[in-house]
Image 1 (cartoon, rainbow, N blue to C red):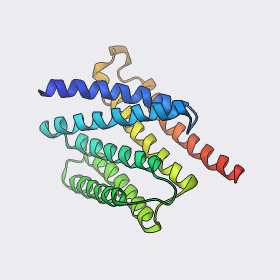
Image 2: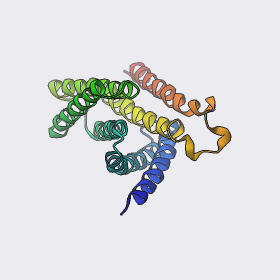
Image 3: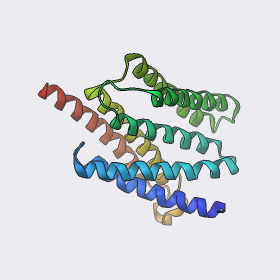
Image 4: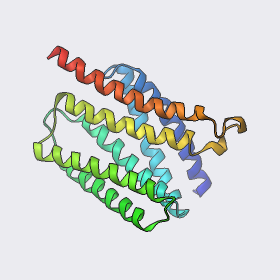
Length: 213
């Protein structure tokens, strides 16, 4: 398989991720359609990141290496948060915490050595990975999380992975779009919308659980 084939897989899986992720955000959380769309999103994101990593390494696109690694980490930990029962944790969370810390250290290290133009991206991914890894450590120390905390852990990580994928496509791949769309402020709409929906669902889950408690 050559690079062109891997890039094609990356594009197909990226498109599938965005469509299925949009469906998962739309459907009520915990419903059958949400679970189905979420499963497709999870598998497509894994394939997309797995295809992106070797291409980014071969092309020396280290910002993309950081983005793909962090996105893969977010999706994996978000999926496991949904699969775990309340107050349940294990080896996966320990490995994930170490992976998040490694991504953070590597990205921050690159941020300190690369040109100023790329440094903010490395610092951004590195800082977020460090924050997520600290949350992983907190989950391990507490012996797992339950209720709203577990659902929120799943939600924000899935949504932020969706945010990275959406931003990478609509803002980072404008060359594949019609010329009239390139540089348009409208391309920011789907990216911002993902963050808005993340906040909406986090608040909805929290206040709905409090109302029924």
